[in-house]
Length: 354
Image 1 (spheres, one colour):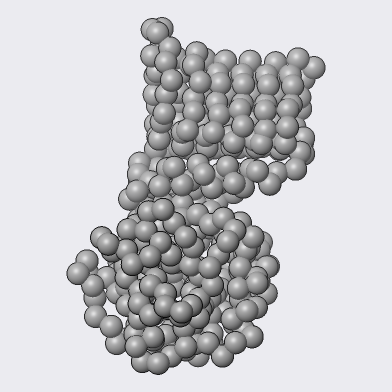
Image 2: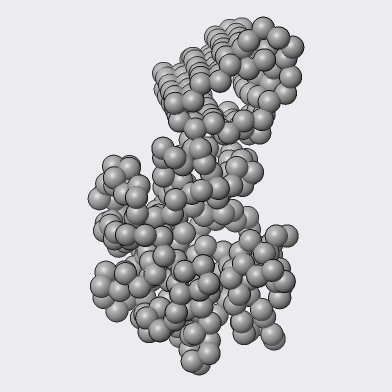
């Protein structure tokens, strides 16, 4: 069995971060989202992975390489334009060479991985298996209609959802899916929809099984979802202090600090993670915060936020919360009345706060 990771989207819902970075490489708990997908596939016993790439292919190739660091083999498949999930499957036909495969959307996170789902699929004669999850906002997803436990209809982003069961970004297919993707027409938005391809399989009598995911799953396409995924991953931390913590500082709860980091006259209250060569001085780092490599936080308070590498939060005089700060960003204090801030900054941004 092989795997196909889709990593070619533009990430418009995470702009301005994705103006300068692939959305699949934005870190959650200081690890790129895409790496979680690769590791989940590897842990399911699959070592041959194709990655669909688009405009950000150079960045993704540089981060992932040939897959050796993960113990897998990676082949890159160029998609000239984001023409839909089914189009990504279509252009991967040569790579699959008739094998069954799992398709994984590169900006999705499933906390407990996919090993049991892959094993379940391999033990059946199903032509496809789709993962579903109950969601409160079904209009934002592909949605399944179920009758008697069987999938009878799939609808992409419906205005009036037939159920609250959304398609999770993991699918399993055998070679018959290529008949489907080569037979369907583009949707009204000009894309080949994976929901239409799966509906084709259903209509033609192919066996499509479903599995409802009961553990947590996140599509990290938006700021709030990124922060929620970060919170969920950090909840699983075990304390590991690899950097220096001076006598005036306190570490509370589950905290990870990487080598070269310095905690000076500060409080870090977990779950939280501090990357390599960071400096946290005269500051408070609150729960569910990830501070990435070489960042400096001085005279400031941060909680429930993601700070990307090489950024600086200096003497802001207020608490930064619920924020995603891009690479090499600078946030500093002005001299007027402090207030609460909520920010989403792109790479190389510089903000002076009031």
